[in-house]
Length: 181
Image 1 (cartoon, rainbow, N blue to C red):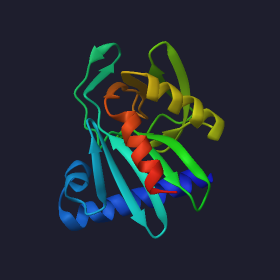
Image 2: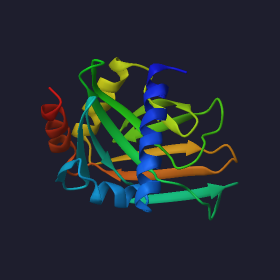
Image 3: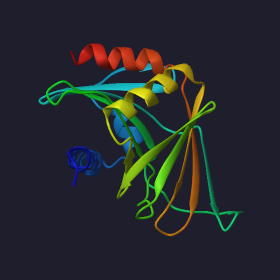
Image 4: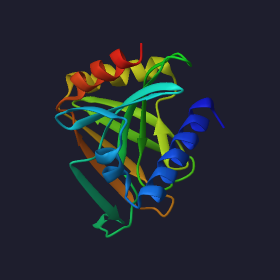
């Protein structure tokens, strides 16, 4: 497992434990959490001190699920697009996406912002760019864009298309990064 995958597994365990303790889903957790430090339009900013890490996160404005080209009713967990800053590890803007289901093994997630497309690599329910150089390219596109569309395939063969608003994205990233210097 890569260091990113290990971090995400730990992050997911914290989110699941907090969710179980609070009896609420991650969206409610994010709204009630004491570590939520700001909101910038469609993006929430969180900060933790030990270890120091800050992140911006958003939920999709629209989700479309299809199977064999037809609309499909499916159960999905939390769907989130994250950008994380962890000064202790040198992470300065790691992009990640959780689709709320296990991605098809060996598949990738397509992230499209305007006319730019990026390939995110999957591990279980998480996807992210291959390296920090790719993170930087994705961040630049997200800062310049109006929306981000993530298209993926589940382990069960369902095609998903999640559209995220980028209103407030740049301000949220500036806030998260400044809190994690």
